[in-house]
Image 1 (cartoon, rainbow, N blue to C red):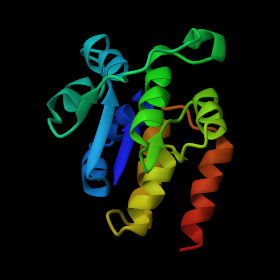
Image 2: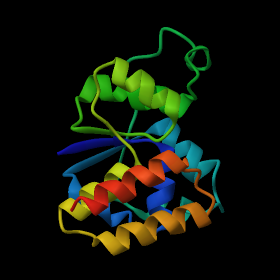
Image 3: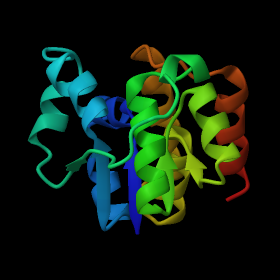
Image 4: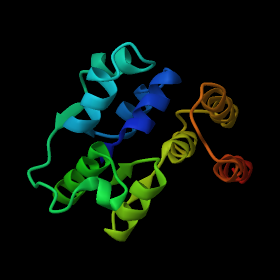
Length: 163
């Protein structure tokens, strides 16, 4: 399976010290060059930057296409735009993106979208995390400053309760 990942899911999993979940769940994890630059180069010294830089199994890739419209006009940043362009070219099983507008555009493009909480749920379903570990991860993300709406927090809790 192949995933293309944006900045927030990478940072969130690095904060949880669980980048390994991506490695265990996917055969190929692509990080667009703009996302890598945002998280590792511009984000040097910030939480998660070193862990992501050391994850040599992440494949840094640039989309071949160039946007025909400025990303900001679509409400996207450069990283999100590259995620979507790369996804259109590489046809991933999952596009991992948390930002609302990026998710909307990805869905409009017919791309399979998941976010950080979707990764946690999938990890539980795959036996890589327990339900308790997923709930603890959710709380650690919120406590660590990752913005997750109450609606999405409730969604994850309800999905885990069904298991």
